[in-house]
Length: 169
Image (cartoon, rainbow, N blue to C red; front, side, top):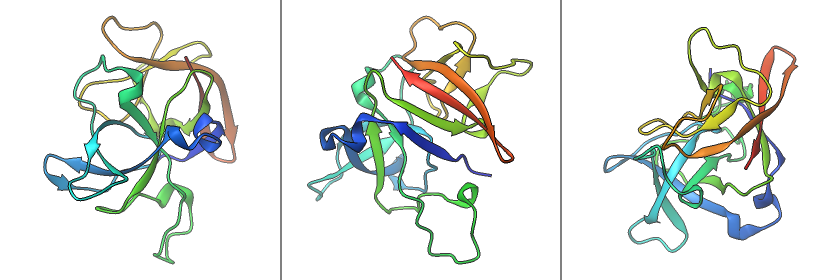
């Protein structure tokens, strides 16, 4: 299952300067990317004027303006796929990403996070970046030399899905 994302209160929904069109790369090859992941932004894709190259974060302590949250509209051309958790942004196709801004709020299903074994997530837990991984990490207390994305501000179950809401800051 792929993560499902909600954009509860994101600055990029009103301020276009906080949006990026991206293609996700693993090395030199464009690959598919799920919504709800965190990517590192590089320069523009060669030959493009508006599409940025994105990759898995290269370090855990990147500036927040160098990372973005992938959240493209869930438009799937495969009619057999009916659920949001079946959606993935196809290989080589531009996706939408939001540069995170203090005060932004979004929610991702629990499978979109990396959570340590035996950890029971609670409000106030820290959401941070992990080098080499596009999944945000939830920890009880901030890790040194890591980019803090925000904190878990709410935990709710909608249908069969558990969402962790993140308040950026």
